[in-house]
Length: 243
Image (cartoon, rainbow, N blue to C red; front, top):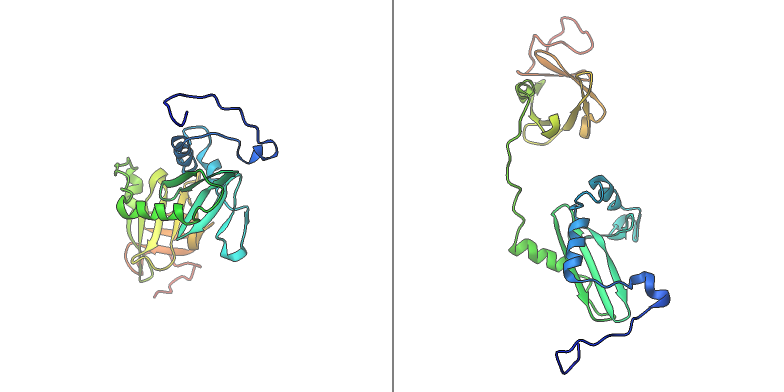
């Protein structure tokens, strides 16, 4: 724009030569906000969400075990104030820009500045903290899911010896087994074609869960509806031995 009139003037096209790969790119705050949403998970079919998650995994870190900064696949990464951020900084002589996203919280922040240096490294984390404080993220609206009645019948209270556990039904026919009170051996399980369940994580990762009429057999860990059920099988074929 002309400095003293509402007139548009043609500007000479600029070629930054060797600096071109570093950022000879024109954008707007709106475009960068859309890019931040993409990096946060709103891929809209352009990339598989699993591919984007892989891009956010650290390939190299700048400071070893401290791991406050590093790189994924094409993305800069940072851990600041308990957040794990992905995005990228950018600069050209006279200009600075940065985009950071927190995929776990579904938030992002960005800035564009007409300066060569001097921007605070905590500007965007501070903006994300302000967002948390004044506009906390609302939980997703609850939507009831359909469930197999046979799986629902498995849920509820189970016991390993005297210790109480809860078995919960997860989306996509998964199961979650965890001690009452939360402390102790817990795992999620996914269904297998032969009718068994495979431990996905936690203490029982890789173990096979078999469902019987009156008990659960988790690789010889026997879970019953009542503590020390005398009718439940004893692991190891110990015959008449009882607790």
